[in-house]
Image (cartoon, rainbow, N blue to C red; front, side, top):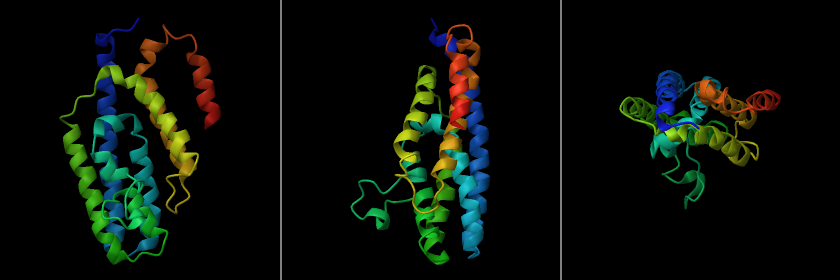
Length: 202
């Protein structure tokens, strides 16, 4: 059996990995915002994908991100105004605009809001504490969400990047398993099979 005490070191290691990942999200989102601000939408489309994929790699932390995830990576599902609803924000709002003919002037506010949201999340994460017992569950939920939303293209707003996002989600799953591996290697005989299946999924 694994105790709660056993899970504390991998949870702390994972939190540090997420913190480093958020630094990169902030940097890449800043590049996206800068391209929008100067009106270079071709550069903005190029900058959008790496910023979004970097955020998606942190998938195991979504539950700990709380409402911030909705502002950063939410969809228009359930919104009365759909893609034109003011509550539709974040990466997918910008994606929709970039691939549906929006002007730079209409995307400056969403890009600024996204940059502000990821910066605020980075600051909040420094004070956050994940429940160590939830770490393994997050690995499962990343792939469950991948099947439900990415492989069905339900979250495609024009970029056609769902397969790339699915790969980023696999990276996120591997990051969780890497922190849990010292505990799993002596307790879970199916770990080599899991590794092979994840490899085939790539």
